[in-house]
Picture 1 (tube, rainbow, N blue to C red):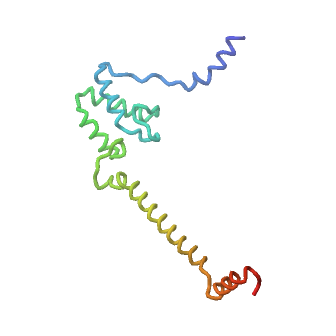
Picture 2: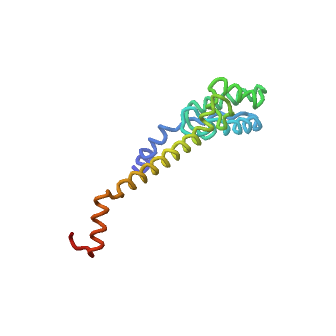
Picture 3: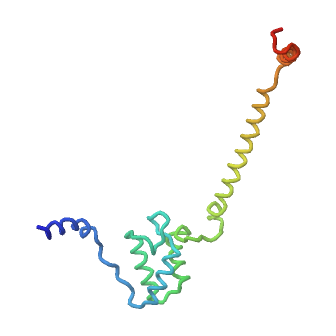
Length: 154
């Protein structure tokens, strides 16, 4: 009974277990592939590298990169292939060009824009509060009269 409960407890874990990915027979190829996979973004995961991702697509891309490395392609050729297939999005450090200008400078432009809007709002608010605080000519005269009579009604 104890063994049955133990098997029943681990059955969900066994059901979701995957087969281990085949590694390259050459450890240098595997090291190169993992170094490249650390520089490339997983296309379906949020903010994970191809090396860190457990998605099926990332596994397929690592396997493809491993195959290209085993064929003798250089790192630049492998990265160029990935960029030609998936665009600059696949790079964790995309190059500065016309397509990536918003990516590189967008946050700064947004920050400056929000700062300018905040300064304008505060300036307008200050002017509005100052206008509300000013007394009319009649109110001014009444206030002076109250002060001269020590707060007694005129």
